Image (tube, rainbow, N blue to C red; front, side, top):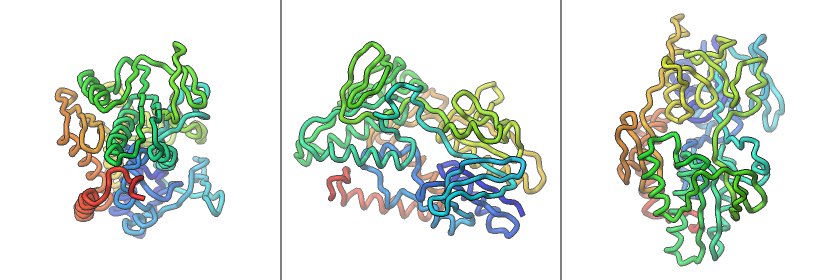
Length: 410
């Protein structure tokens, strides 16, 4: 009997155990186990909606316990803390039972990445992060009172990548909607980026359109601005400019958690990603696979797979097929990333996207529909089209009956 353990219940990890549970888990000779400390799955590209109070927990969150029972895999609510490659065991910390060990035949690490504070003084103490649903919920718990209190409030967001841009746009939309309630509260948002443009990894023409839209929404965009240190209620730039704010959110750069560098000698790079071959197998242990943002996976042209949601989704599908080959004694095939472009949401009714190898840049409501479709494709893998269709219909009905900003519903 083969025991496959997948650590990390993000988009890649959950899609992988779903596929493996359906294909292998229902057979008596295979056991598929998901190890994840959280109780519910949230699609990471939508964490900014949780922080802005516009995410629908009832329809879009997934209970790991219920999902596992329906899809042929086991769920262990725990955080991985150690690895012993010689005995093929991992150590996990559980919220109730404490420390335990789990044995595996094959181990898949899909723990994602976190924001990189670049060791900037004061950031960890005085800034919020959006690396998990729990952090996004904490941000919402602090933003919500500001939106309910009359007067102008200030919010600074450091990092104009996809997360920072989408959060700024979503909060700007929420602040605009609040004016309909004559509540007297407004949110002044400043987006800070060290590079010379927002979305520095995207085509220049896409960056221009995104920044123009942000400014139309009332967001102050500061490019070529590097943060020197963070203090309580203010950020100090490299040229000693002071940006005061009621709340400060850090969304600049990525790295992987430090504990990945302590996994029984597995190779890591400077941002703590685990080094793998093009088969997604660890460079030092063929029984350990790594996928998603936590993997440094080489490509034929000498580049590496970028840390994007679509790369993680593609890796999950690829690895599910490779496990089927592995069980039949066939050789593993390399993972080749296919770049499908980039879509960034700027509020619930507008998005900008670069498609066809960045040759076409589109914007508007139809592109926002494409953004939502990407999320529905993720849900389709988890549930199938029948339930996804029902969820879409329910969400549209709720949208007609509920205010856009859920904080005003209570």
